[in-house]
Image (cartoon, rainbow, N blue to C red; front, side, top):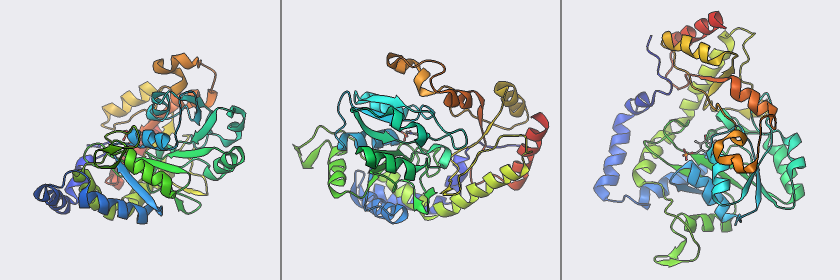
Amino acid sequence: MNIDFANLGLAYEEHKLAIDKAMSKVIKDSSFIMGPAVADFEKNLNSFVGTKHSLTCSSGTDALLLAMMALNIQPGDEIITSPFTFIASGETIAFLKAKPIFVDIEENSFTIDPAKIEKAITEKTKAIMPVSLFGQVADMNAINTIAKKHNLYVIEDAAQSFGATHHGKRSCNLSTIGCTSFFPAKPLGCFGDGGAVFTNDDDLAEKINSLRLHGQTKRYYHKYIGMGGRLDALQAAILNEKLKYYCNDIIRRQYVAETYSRNLKSSIIKPKITPENTSVWAQYSIRVKDREQVQEKLKSLGIPTAVHYPMPLHLQECFQYLEGKKGDFPIAEQISNEIMSLPMNPYLTEKQIYYITEHLNTIL
Ligand SMILES: *Cc1c(COP(=O)(O)O)cnc(C)c1O
């Protein structure tokens, strides 16, 4: 059996005609930078997410940078985030010379544990950056309550959760600013790098728009130190097509996840979605001891797996200056050692899913 982990090729094949046509239009019109494709996509993003402002940008990483720059995060400011995430969450904080303050995660959702946040707040804390991991948002209601009490911003790192919901409201519309990524392997992916920043605040939106255009307010007049952070019009055109059937993709991902969970035997620790959430299943990850051996066996059966993520941020070499050490965040460390992602994409067939679960039930 031939199983593809993310199946990015089929995502193109399925809507090839529409995507090719949208790309041709951008090329024929030579509107490569900003222009109608980007404006259309931002309008569609607003109606999908429910925010007043959507500002597309060059990547999820740049979305996080733009959000913190707009909030005027300064060297020495502290930002609370999860140690169990992709490097960009902590890296962007450090890139601005602010200080990432890690808080351990909940064992069930793998997202930051709100009960541990308050202890980490100091006078230097400016923001909380919860990470919506594997397609599910953190306990945003609890986090927003803490933020309000301490007068902090909340920046949702929603790179993996575009389309997910929390109490019926979409991810990216749950805090001061939401940031997502359209990296090809994310639930809504383009054909290169891309991202977006979301907010309901008019002033922040205006500033983010300027920051992604080198801080300009009008052509060649620059109010801020910004960056070249725009989304390519070609990517916007592709995303505009893909967004049309994204709800269908989400349903298919949810079906794959439900089928995995139903078929895997009860002794296997499966991902848990809390009742107030729906997930877009960026990853379907189980916990296994002897992970390497299990991965090897699955690989020999034609079943690809991946590890998101093998090392928590506080133990990464680049963060050694923060003096984190083993034992600081025991849950994040344990999950890092055991986590293993199964193939996840809207195109997995029932036969493929059964093949995977049957072998896992035998091996584990
Ligand atoms: C992918 C990802 C990012 C960065 O997005 P890019 O578009 O790759 O820059 C940030 N945070 C998390 C949690 C991610 O998974």
